[in-house]
Length: 181
Ligand SMILES: [Zn+2]
Ligand SMILES: [Zn+2]
Image 1 (cartoon, rainbow, N blue to C red):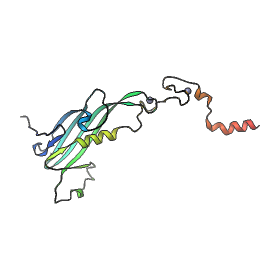
Image 2: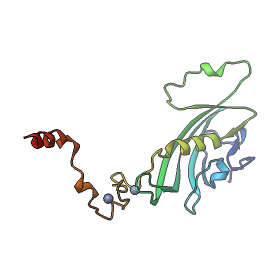
Image 3: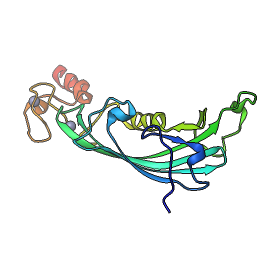
């Protein structure tokens, strides 16, 4: 028997139509579906999620996988970054009379998302997870040598003589000392 789930769009669920307990879904999304400005490498953002319903509360657990084309901040070459991030959120129905902010969620260690009108939307959780996982200084690899600041060759593939001519600055005092003698 196939359970019929009422959906308004690909990222929204009607809470009453979810089964008590686990509800598993696979989503193939474009960045614009989640409202994020990233360039995925000819591929979709793939996400496996489990919406665990307990009455009006829903625990979202899952993961999101995507590949990005980025420019290395040291050597400026384009490279592909593959990401696989965990997603968690806890959806609580907002009741007008009760101050739901007081609910203690510290034990669960997940962010609470408040929903209204029987509809949960996981779009903000997905976009936050993806945005927070993006590197501020992307590197093609952790030990990227970058470009020579003097002649501009890519030090990952080439050698240049600029470095050899420059002495380690820690030896400068010694050099002066030797000159004075
Ligand atoms: Zn690099
Ligand atoms: Zn050089």
